[in-house]
Every structure is written in C-alpha cells, then in structure tokens.
Length: 378
Ligand code: SF4
Image (cartoon, rainbow, N blue to C red; front, side, top):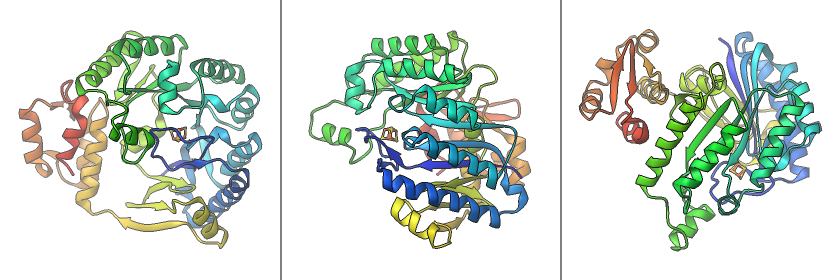
C-alpha cells in the first residue's frame, strides 16, 4: 500500500509566543547536521521498507519552518526523497512556508524540485495581533509571499489563519477573512488559538496581562469563517479546513482516513503496519542515533484494536462528509453502531452527531464542540 511521507524541519528563525510545536531557533551548524542525518534516515528506510511502503502518494514538508532552510538544503532534501522513495505520478508535494522566510528564488527552486502545493502561515492581518503572536512577518510580507509564489509557478496554495486571539475583535477577524480571500488561495485553514501550557502567551495569561478570548466570541468567529468562506466558494471539508473544489489537502486526508504514513526528522510521527511510533525529539539525539546507523525511533507501540477503532472514529468525524460506516466495518469486521452503541446514542440525543447515507457525521451544532464529542470515544 502506498504511503504519505512527512518530513519534519525542526527549526524556526524565532519561536512564536503561542507555539508548542517541536521547533528550535535555527542554527546553521545544526541545520547542516540535520540535513545529513535526514538523508541518511531516508537511506536507512529505503533499505528496510518493502517496495509498496516506498510508494509515496503525498509528501508534506512541515515544521517548524521548512523555508528557514537554505535553498540548497531544500532542493537536496527534495532530490533525496525522489532518490530513496518512489513518488507516484501526480503525487501531492506540500511545503509549509513562513512569509518572513521566502523569496521568488527560493520558491522557484522548490517548485522546480517538485513542490506543487504551498502552505503559508499568515495567521492574522493586524500588526498588533501578529506582534502578540510573536510572528516575524507583517501582513504585507504575506501578500508579497503570495506574489512570489505565483511568480514561481504555484497555483495551489493554502493560507493558515488563527482566530480567538486575546483582544481580537470579530470585526478584525472578518476583515482578515476578506483580505485573505482577495488573495485567491485554493485552500484556507482556520484554527482557534489554543493557549498551551508554558508558552509565553500562556504565561502572560497566567500573570493576568492578557484575557483569553471568550467561548462565545470564538464561536462567533468560527461561524463567521464558515459563512464567509462558503460565500467565497470554499467547501468546508474538515473542522478547520476549507478548499476550492479539487483542492483539499490530500496528505491531511490520509491522516483523517487513518491511512499509513512515515515521518522523518526529529519528533516526526509514523503509522505503519498498525504501529505508531515517533522519532527522538531532540535534534542532537536524532542526529546522533541516525549517524550511528540506526533508526531514531522511540518506543514503537502496537495499537490495540480498541484504540485503532476509536482513532478511526475520531479522525473520520473530523471530516464534514463523516465517517464511512462500510469502510469501518470492512477494516475492523464490526459495525460502528455495535462498538460504540452507548456513545452514539448519547451524542444523537444531544444532537451533536447524525447518520447520513452510509456515514456518521457531526451536526452543525456538533462542529464547534467537536472536542467534547471526541472525548466520548477516548
Ligand atoms: S513558525 Fe510555526 S513552528 Fe515556528 S515557532 Fe511559529 S508557530 Fe511554531
């Protein structure tokens, strides 16, 4: 079976104030070691994996900030993927990009090396909000990044936005959605801000310096996004994701359909042969293990059947089209209604899920409170 391939680039020019992703401040020397180890890791896997698991249907280079690497690093990494894996014809090759770290030359080189989808982290339009988030770019940098992407030949690009930022007004969010749709991306992701423990923004909240956004305002902003993006021609296909017809992110769809993927680079997660595993989180430890000729995997975990079923359920419910009941039964040999009878009955009574033709999905009422629905299956 073909796989999705994920490459984690664990560097950023500066850490954002809300970020709890695995990313470290970029250091050229460590980035060089990382690149060597990453290519070695590809080589190690290409010798171990059966042919089918080397067939790549989607490749996603994420982070961190992949575009803080040099053009030469990015091109070498992409060429190595082509060398060690079989990227299937028509493969989707996505790369995350921070507007503060791109120019036409870098994007042109990435496009020539096969990247056919860009994901730009825009997050907000207002200077004050970008500053609060600790972003290194302005909204005009994002506009310039879009122009550079078009010049480099990209047609397919996504923009990430955040709502529910402390002090953000619904009018500012509306303005941001308008400004972004004017730039005509093919895909937009909108995420409610999570104040993750121990991040600088969380500490400011603990110290009483900022007020978190209220649930009502956050819900209003989510409703605004659904309404405005629908009007602009985007299809709402996953809780946080909207796409023009034909431009859904195929790599992320693999995650939501709970299909196999291989993650390379520090902290990258994989799901292969019903086992979930992740790499060493620290770039130093990752480099060391790979360069001694072993994989950098930490504790592979064989997933019990009940966990696999619950994960498939939760991931499938993230999709607006819902969980395919026949696919679930074919995969596990049991009906969803039998495995999760109690949970489904409760959620139906609350009006948070509904049955459609061959599917179980979240209702309009269930969408904004999806996490409360998912807790039922954990
Ligand atoms: S650019 Fe993304 S990964 Fe890097 S610090 Fe900011 S939020 Fe985190």
